[in-house]
Structures are given as C-alpha cells and as structure tokens.
Image (tube, rainbow, N blue to C red; front, top):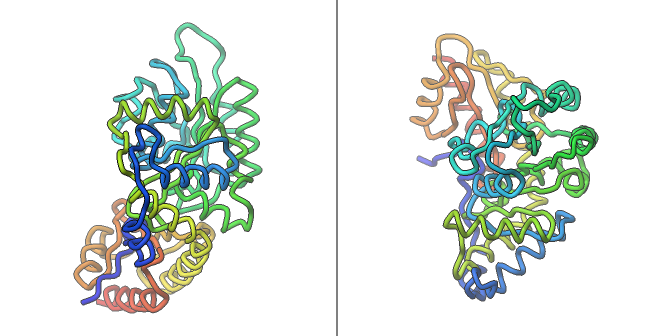
Length: 342
C-alpha cells in the first residue's frame, strides 16, 4: 500500500539531482570558514533575501533561538503571537537558553496586527521587563498557512522602530508567502532586522535553515551557533542539497494549487468543514464534525494509507508538498469520502 504523507512538508525526501549534488560537493571545515559550498549557499541566500549575510544552521528552531539570543539580553521581553511557532513549538527555548520572557498576543499575525501591537506597548516602569524584540511569522503555520502582507509587516515594523525595537521574521515558509502574493520575497524581508527560512520544508532539502541579517548580526549569530553545538565541519554535503532546494522555489506554486484542490474537495464532503478563505498556501485545516474525533479520524486515515496530523480535538491539518501529486490528492479525497460514509 502506498503511503501518502500529508503530515508536513518536512517529510519530503531528496531528489536524485539533490543526492548527486551532495555526492560531488566540495567541502571544508565550516567552523574555519573553509567550506566553499556552505559559503556559496550563504551568499546565494543573502542575495535572494536582500540581506548582507546569512548563516547556515541545523533547523528553523535553532535559527529562531539564535536570533533571540543576538537581539536580546537576559530578562528582556519578546513580543510574539500567541499561536506562533516560537511560542508554541520551540520547547520553551527562549526561557531555557536566553532567559527572556515571551509576551504572547492574540491576533498579532493578522490584519489587525499593528493595532494589537500598539495596544500591547507599556510605559517605562521599574516593575516591567524591557521589551527588545517583536517576532513575526510568515506564512503563519497555526493560522493555516496564511500570509501576512508586506503592508501589515511594514506597519508593525514601523511601530517597532518608533519604540527602538528590533524585528525578527520566522520565515520558515517565506517563499510560499511570496508566491502566494506574486511578489518578491524582499518585499517581506525589508521589514525585519533578521529573518530565517527553512530549506527542509517545501523546498525539499534533508536538513537545514538559513538565518539572515546584517554582517554584524551574523558575526554574533555564528558565535551563538557554535555555543549551541551547531558548528558544522564538512557541511558542504548538506549545503549542496540546499543549493538544489532553492531551485524548487517555483514548484511551491504547484503545492498551493494542490492544497486548494484538496481543500475544495474536502469542503464538499459531509462530516468536514473547511474555511476556504484561509487556504492561501500549502496548508489545509479541516474541522471534523459528527461522531469522529480528530484523533480517531487521523488514525483511520493512517490505517488506509494517508497520514495527517490531528491539531486538536476536532481539527486536522494536511500539508501538500513536492512528493504529493494531483493523483495522490484524488486518492486522499476518495479515502476520506469512504471513511466518513461509514
């Protein structure tokens, strides 16, 4: 039985082109700055993002946490959305590693984000922590893969600068955001002081993310990467996969098309509810109604060859990616119809 894995776009496997590039990669010791393939990847990524420099790191969580360490001091406050990846999925690392307090705001990653942020600002007071950083996320994972527009990003950035705050963008799927709006990725990255994106999600690399910012920021970030045990040695074999992954950016549009097709199909099946207005990229969130819980529904899907994630008592998430075809989506819809007709 073929398994169709829609749990996340992190489940993609390296293509033959990627494997070949990894096999022939020129390598050196990256801690000494001598891995030419890593250096090439970092330069290409910096140019794509419109930033001075980038740093190749093991994961998106590592990239985000390094950014927090660079931008803050112990005891500082960091403003985040209450459903953001940094707040929800990073193991409390901000407190564990950086000794900073996260201030979660409902609706920061929405069209009302600027006003939400404005209302959250407090006057200076000895009783309050010093706020240093605002963190955004684009696309917004727990928002269903929705896109925060450049206009909203700019408004939040301008507000932050009025308070002399820095802005970090968790751009794990930032190229999905750019393709969804038909704009240049730099339309987003110009409104942040640092940004990271993932190579190992929709772009299909086996591992790795890139953290970008000014030369000074990356110089400090490199030290924190080493302190966290993230100093690469002959990492060119992984960076080579990253260079091939960047060629997959245009393919993300196909993932979006497949997600829309899946969402529209699911919305027509009794027993499921899908808010089609929130299906903007490659993530589809469906509400399970009736006798099935989300966990039971996901378990039955898995038994019949379709993997997805239960996101709560009554919601499931499907994520399309390069290893899922239109034919696979048709199969998924057929299986879902069969299950919900039982």
